[in-house]
Amino acid sequence: MATDLFETTGTDERPGAPPVTRVSEPERPDGTVADQLREMFEALFGGTPPVHIDLWDGSSLGSTDGPGRVILHSPDALRRLVWSPDELGVARAFVSGDIDLVGPVAETLRALQDGLPTDARIAAAALPKVLAGGRAVGAFGRPLAAPPEEYVPHGIRHSLRRDKSTVSHHYDVGNDFYALVLGPAMTYSCARFERPDMSLEEAQAAKHDLVCRKLGLHEADSTDGGKPRLLDVGCGWGSMAMHAAARYGAEVVAVTISAEQAALARRRVDDAGLSDLVEIRVQDYREVPDGPFDAISSIGMAEHVGKRNMVRYFEQLHGLLRPGGRLMNHAIASIGGSKMNGRHFMHRYVFPDGELLDLGDTVLAMEAAGFEVRDVENLREHYATTLRHWVANLERRWDEAVELVGEGRCRVWQLYMSASVNGFDDAGIQLYQTLGVRNHPGGRSDMPRTRNDWG
Image (cartoon, rainbow, N blue to C red; front, side, top):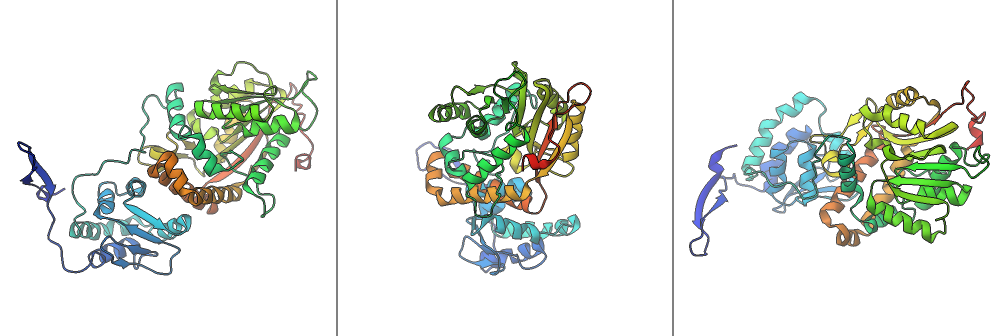
């Protein structure tokens, strides 16, 4: 970075104050900011940008036929991209408010992504134009501080302490905020829209019921003649546990390592009159001592475990099941797997240390732990619909959400949920329910003959 962009000019008006360092403005060509940046954007997109771009001096460029508009409020938006020319720089500019997206965010992100060249040579050829454009509008200078919502975990990856810290970063932002985004269902995982006119709350109940039926909670009582006993791993705010208890009379042990989730889950259980059936614990799945269970549900939990730990994860759950007991592993996946770390937006702002496994790796890990895999179902289209509901909830009550957690946090959730809509729509990511059983000695599974049993 050229050092002549900084110079010492003037002094603070206070007596005895040290000299003030200011960024000197480079000489700029005549014309609007749009004139100065047009070649840069056309080089980046291989022609006219696919969306309309409004710039801080009131000028604009790009297509007016796109789904939304991008607003750059100051040269700081470009400065963040100069210092971090990747998704992290874009995220920092959006979270800090240097960039705004007007209109449907998911569709605007899709148009921008589709408009960028996939050939690395084309992107590299655009670099001189990017540097020239940034220099013309004064975008160079010291790097700006990252938004306070950015988080970098410390310690041994997936240790008990680090996992507790990373889970707290995401889930302990306030129960009121999650209630606003998730709606009355208070369920932070993929719903199941059996009919297109279903409400989000109805679709979440349908998902919980599907899991219960796949686990066999609607069949005979447990082998000792009592109520079926369910372990719900990563129980969130208790919705799955409450559904299993209220609908099927299950005795449920529900565990989370988020203290805020557990506190609200206990209140919800008490309010529903289910405290005699549901126990909410602040406990890591690795520390559950009191099997055996007739069934285990793990919904939106495996993404936090890590590929290298998956066999041990499933071994732990296998050991907590009785023979004939079933496990439902409901988790986001990606082809080839995806480890969130380094400069990924999702790692720094959303799910630190999160990992999406390839479905094949999940099946292999379950089999290595002793499970027989009996069913796999992909609900990715349902997750895209679920996310659209969440984004709509957030945007409809934006001012309330900002009061609860601040604008930066709201921008993080708006960006990650909108981008995830596109990921599920284009099959870049999937949502699999993988059902496994711990067979009896000799191979008896107690599984129904067909899927018709759970519908």
